[in-house]
Amino acid sequence: MKDLEHEASGNVFPGDLRERVSRQMILRELGEKGQAAISSAHFLVIGAGGLGSPAILYLAAAGAGTITVVDADTVSVSNLSRQILHTTSTVNVNKAKSAVIAVERLNPHCRIIPVPEFADAVKLKALVKNADVILDCTDNLATRIAVSRAAHDAGKPLVFASAVRFSGQLTVFDPSVPESPCFECIFEEDDPGNDVKAAAVGVFSSVTGIVGTLQATEALKIAAGIGSTLCGRMLFIDALNMQFDTIRVKRRKRCPVCGERH
Image (cartoon, rainbow, N blue to C red):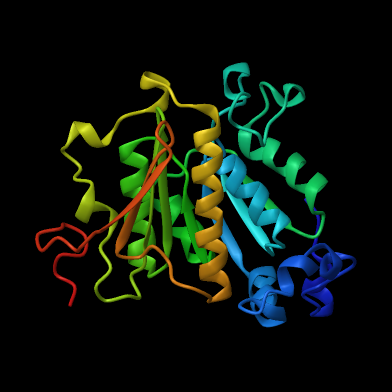
């Protein structure tokens, strides 16, 4: 890992970073202020697989200040068709550590912190506390619930996404928005239909790229404080028929996490 120059100098655009992000920074909606916010932000990415791969790469390329990557799994050959963060040379390497290699090659100004272990509730609480935006790129219900509860308790925005077969879904849960639902308002813990894994039913390789890139887009917007996010809405992607639909999602009165919040 590399130490950021701006941590010592106070400069959020060290070295050639300003030139790297110049095409993005000239956007009227973003500007230098928004880019500075991105380059000072700490993103926590849980999962460095199909969704985490494009999300991490685009966060780093966009000039993210710090990215913490949590993943206990190792890279396998079957991952390589869709997990573009990893390569043949990193097969059998821990995915969080493989992410360090990829990010340091892409943008050496981005601080990348690997957490090559499973994050339980206690660990998640500490990790979420230090982050500005959390991205849930996991693929199982138990972890998604743990991540959601940690983000909700800390009052941190969470960008959730999933991808199976030819389909994807994406939303933002933001405890700072009074009417925002949380993960468990929509996905109940005791519903087995909410725990479908790509390893069991398959996933079209490029779908993870589409969804993970959109996930990074929402996270970057949140960090920069620009535009409207998917908070209160769920985006559904049907890549087989190339259709995108958005529906409203609401808080559930009897939600075990946020049902009593006013």
